Structure formats: structure tokens, C-alpha cells
Image 1: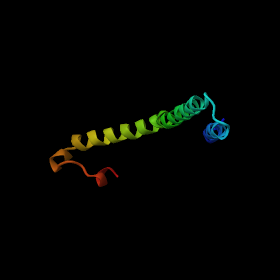
Image 2: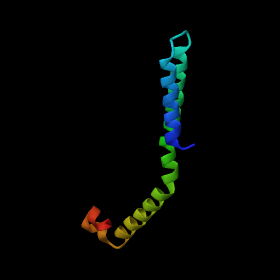
Image 3: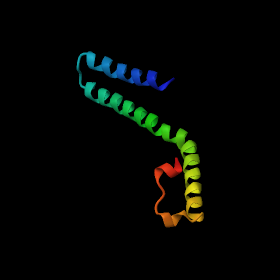
Image 4: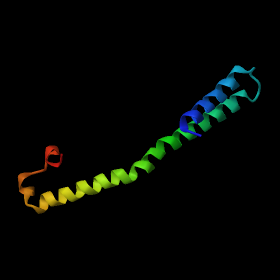
Length: 87
């Protein structure tokens, strides 16, 4: 199930519960559905970092290499490198 459908399904469950007559269990059930929704949202949020880790790692590795070359080539005496230098 894709994330959007799962999100909407959670919202629908909350909506359905609050539209029914209130009883002794309503608040607990609504709170449980909200907790499940928040757990899914945390999963979706954290997943983006897992899937992007390799891409970000490659960029960081290239930058570190370029930075080491900058100083190895004697540019360190010119001061801190600029963003334009690495761009």
C-alpha cells in the first residue's frame, strides 16, 4: 500500500470513530488511531534518510576529496575555500 493511501486510511478511521456516538471507549480508540498515524508518519519521514544515505554519502565523499586536494595543492595559504571554488 502506498504512503498516501495509508495516510488517508488512518484519517478515515479517525473520522469514522468521531462521527459515531460517543461511548466509554471513543477517546481511547481515537487516541490509538492518532498514535498509529503518527507512527506511520515517523516511518515515512525516517525512510527518506535511509534511501538518500548513499546519494548523500557519495556527495560528501567527493567534497572531502576535493577539500583535501585544495589543501594538498597549497591553496590553504589563500584562506578558506569559497563555495564558488567547489561549485
